[in-house]
Figure 1 (cartoon, rainbow, N blue to C red):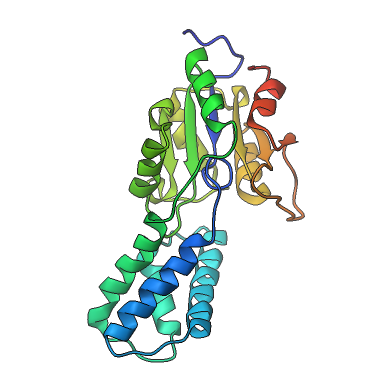
Figure 2: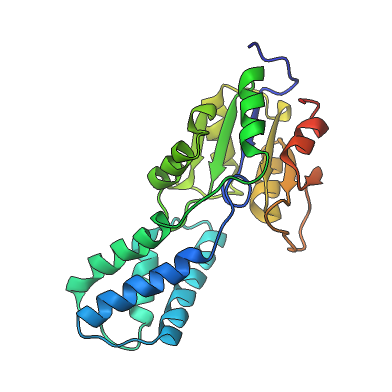
Length: 243
């Protein structure tokens, strides 16, 4: 169907916008690491693992906020170093794979109204993109989840930070995504995401309509908010005069 909306393209954040984050993978990760470490003769208790994983996340968060590209290998290296005992280098690849496997084996679900929203946008001819900051789960895995959840084919371009090499709010990740979607006028595009610092500020810096989605979490960071705030994807389409 021909695009009948006033927008050249709509883009969406990934985590807590399309798919809800969960801590279930952390418990799985601790279990896998405990087993690997015990088999290799190392005894590490749950509190020590909690501390090490927390330090790994804090490292990533600092890197992310400074827009320094950081992935699985770097984070796992920090976690291993934070353990109270020196771990043989030969075990590092196994711990890395277990770290990722814990995420890959955790069930993921779409947030409410995502599938309906994407189907409507697809039928209306409105190009849809995803703009995502990638952490320890690489983009091929993130894409496969979208395949498994049935919406991959409803997305026209993927702007993943591990491919574009910048995080939000850098405008270049939005610029690259809109170019891939064929949208030439940022003012006639909109981005929907859950974070003020990255999604709202990044979209606005490139002249897009910036919308904050609150259906999965509330961002209390005291920075400028979106042009519209809603906990409903369909309500957002109505605000944009698309639905």
